[in-house]
Image (cartoon, rainbow, N blue to C red):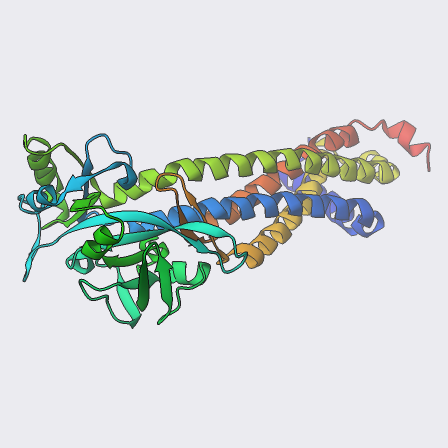
Length: 399
């Protein structure tokens, strides 16, 4: 009976021998490596789109901010409030208060067309009208250049995401939207959140420009504490004067990201799975070639007392090493090509563009490695079994 130590030494010997003979099969080995690299590169690259979009939505969330919309509305675009209703919302218990009153911002959301810097094609860009308290409610918003807009004037401030993606939004630029000309007076960040994709202005001015009367679409409220949400929600939803739904800001944007995230993830996984089939066949070809070229060597080892188990494991390890090498190459290419690459996509809930950066996370790199390992093990399994079943006498006759 072979001892565990001897069994292990047999595996190491056969694996070492197999690796040293790879240069003799460099063509098929390279096909296996780069086939796996392509699969992992596509998988990680596509899924980094979904991760980047989700990161923008996640960075927007603040559990201390509640969002109030008309009951039954799935998004701001489907909601409407009168000015009196928004003031009523701001007076409910649970709302934080500042020096100038409740920290509540009644907001109006419209979509305008602007050309993309990269292609020149028009895209929908969100233009948001906010109340003066908005900068205390949305505490992540920070001015980085210029100044805040002045109430009652045709002035706008621009998120850095919108600035980088769309033309005509540089500081000091004049922007013709509808019947009005607007001046860009400031640039802001929002901790990587969705507000960086938006343009902000005074809600009252925006109402007049779009003939919205005294109407709004949502009310954002900073709560006295995250724990005050339920009290605030119960008070609003049970008041007969109002017909509203209340959600936390982070939950609202997390839900908005779900559909696009699932779509991109599903398509990316499907494409990678189809490519993986080809990569598995490439690995099969490589390992069958390896076994065929080493028939005499394997038979000689078997005749010298090497067990079939170490032979099987050695072929699987060789296939796994080649696939992991390809996976590392693919993951590195995806990281350097895509991580941080900025673009925009359509948010189907608001029908406007959201700017974001591809995000190649450590979890995606691990997922790519697992994918590469699976390809290697599947591609090496049948050749390994064939190597273990080689008739020793028949193979030795080839010497």
